[in-house]
Image 1 (cartoon, rainbow, N blue to C red):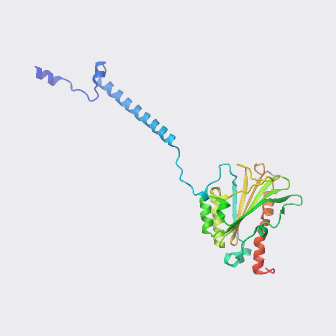
Image 2 (image 1 turned 30 degrees about the horizontal axis):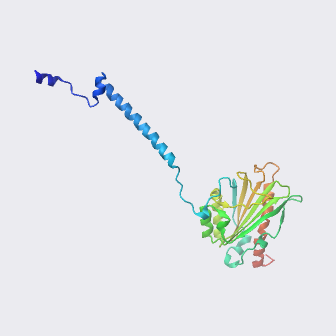
Image 3 (image 1 turned 60 degrees about the vertical axis):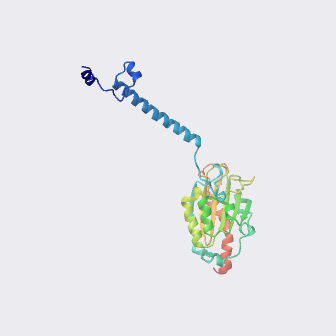
Length: 268
């Protein structure tokens, strides 16, 4: 009889726990409770993992010192347009035929650039660097200008006579026209990741986070960068003639025109 009772005894469930059985909880209920507890445990551990990762912080690879991006509020153009080199500049398409180094006096010979009869752009700061990385930022841009054999970069900051506008002209001395054209083409899409460092002056500066526009011009083996904005940082309105301002700012390119003439002669 004892053996018969043993055969009729219901096998213990894998989900049966003595304490819960003593409380009168059936095996299927105990199983459900274990599943719920497991799910809650997984979720809790996931939240904990997120908290741990959050406490570690974001990982950012170390940047090269020369390629460091300026502070988050550094001025940067919102619009960029690029143009290739006209045939006029073919005589200076190779630096081997135009070996004289640029000078500040040569590039910024004019302290004022006329926009209209009443409006002028006044030179308020200038700088010429032999180390191009001192005047530019952005890892890709610095890599490109290095490969392009950049030996000089001249920057001039201008403020308008009416106190409304600020502009900077940057001229880069590269090894050849192909490098200059390639840089301008690259800047069409990459300018927000690399640009010229702005000069500053008490008489004018690009406002942090303000709106500005820029253009790039291949000029033989040179590249000219025109950068314009309102001093108050707002977008241009109907009365803001950025086209005329840009043409006036390109007055610094006369230095390159004079070099063409020095090679071809006045008759060209």
